[in-house]
Image (cartoon, rainbow, N blue to C red):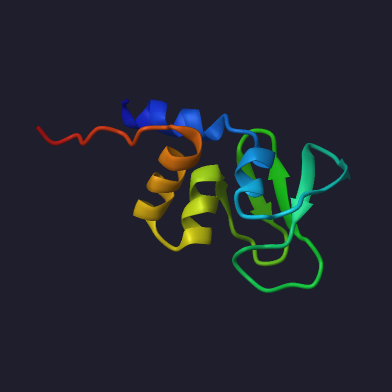
Length: 101
């Protein structure tokens, strides 16, 4: 799998499926273009402020961090390699091939 295809496959995963692996619950509601919020994984907070978008993006209104699903998992696990293994183990998405020959 090429790098671009790898990240597209991850971006297309439903947030619900990814977050359930961490035991995180989504608060659903009428949030405009977002479909739900959770407590931020970057900073400690009492009320949810991390907004989830169906496009595979997220943004925290509290600390300003934002990115995509892969970055979310990488941040949560504190490791790029752990994130790659997470997506392989739970979703069968093989890591991208090395660009080196």
